[in-house]
Image (cartoon, rainbow, N blue to C red; front, side, top):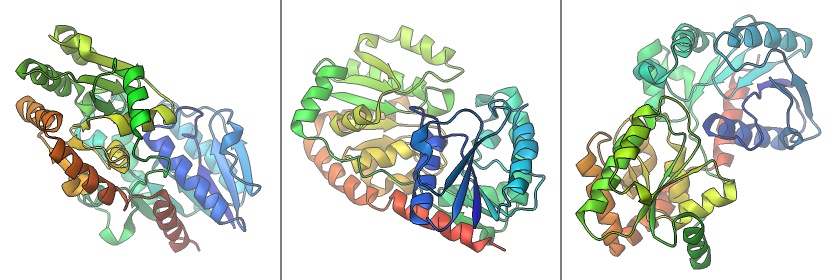
Length: 374
């Protein structure tokens, strides 16, 4: 069988949400099914690390699909041509984009519909494209997979797709994420937080992630008592961050805030395992991978009670409304001062996180692929 795969998010040292999902599922599908040939479609020169087996045939298709104006050219012309030439039996797209000019059955992984609910946080060209094309992708797909029950219900309600056409395939967490030893914790604090305990944020720095209220809550925590903690923010500076930067500059305790930019996976695991808590309070998430990764490291989590996040956090997390600065600060205060609570949540976190594995995700994706074969 010839399985064509949209691999454009497999970017060396840049595996964020969509890239991580792509890498973890594509790698396992290829290695677990050596009897099939996988044609990987890249939109730029690829790194050899993404050629996961001898049953891979890589293709670089022009033009690079990195702008809404170029997406239709890449998917509806370059991909359409390759699907026909490669005699593809099925097309797997882990980022949800599809080719509309093909009869090859397709599995689209639509992670969330954030652009429908928070269009103000997406570029004008992006919103126009997504709102025009994603309803068509949803109807075109022989089957849809998504990463939470919340997202499934959202796709059903927003696009009118039958529930029976959508499979839930939760994100997983790599086995490399694990609790940190005392030695690692000490070294991590020395490297990233001046030997002080710290609260942690992980993710792109962009408005939907609600960094503004997290900064305000941290300032309020520091002003409320003698807390030695710092706030460490890990992730790239994304877009529309003028308000975040303005709030940061106005902070009383901005000297206790650290922006690391992107870090290696090794450092990320150490940072998660050494934090007092992960503070991840977005307005909307299709899944919320940092929450699951922190729990896999036995780290308490403060997150938002919105969209998919209660599904992921369960009873292993503390919750605060994303715009309630006092509530966020109070949850931070609890975890900064209550060692018993931290230990209890750490144990619950390990249990909750155990249900999210990439092996399970890949198996469910494979079942979805098999279900649409002619």
